Amino acid sequence: MTSDTAAGSWRHYGDSTLPGPLAAALELFAERGYEGASIREIAGRAGLSVPGLYHHYPSKQALLVGLTRVVMAELLDRSRRALAEAGPGPREQFDAVVESLLRFHMFRREQAFVASTELRSMEDPARAEYVGMRDEQQRMLDTIVEDGVRGGEFHTPYPLDASRAVTTMCVAVATWYRPDGTLDPDELVARNLVIARGAVGAG
Image (cartoon, rainbow, N blue to C red; front, side, top):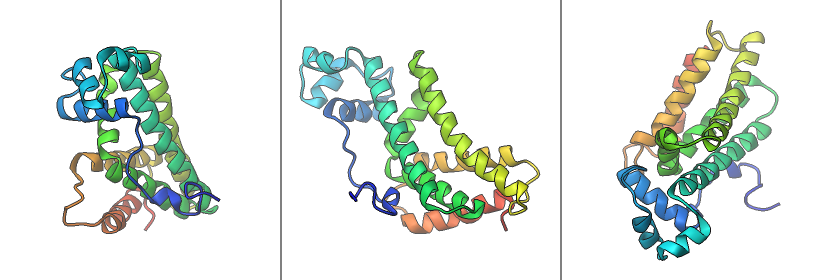
């Protein structure tokens, strides 16, 4: 069993392993936005010539698409592993998926922020692909909350609204979390799980 598939490994984050061009694009998109970053600047930060960058990614749009695919693939992989390890009960599944969302938006906050805010800059069919992956993540939580309501473990009268409110809370972490802040990651997870459980009526 590798470290990536060991039990609980979805909780653990090392440094990002983005390829050089995507790492450079991420930095500049986070600093200046997609429209404010130039191919020449991205190439320079990646240590490549412009033709060298184009050899890997033929356009700035291709860089954005490549980056968002990596981000969403990691998010979904971690959430699926969290859900698979959580057991059959909606409460355990809910806690696991919410925790996974929270940790991702703490430890991959720049990636998550850029992927979310630059959806406006994506072109179809890549935009539709990204939205589909985002919707898959949301459906994962929606299903858990609806199952919990049917089974009498959650008591919200609005399961889909509550589920989406919880996701929005988790995603927003990427906009304000700082590693040197007053709460360490475990404390932040614990507090936000209390809030999330309240939203779905899992008292």
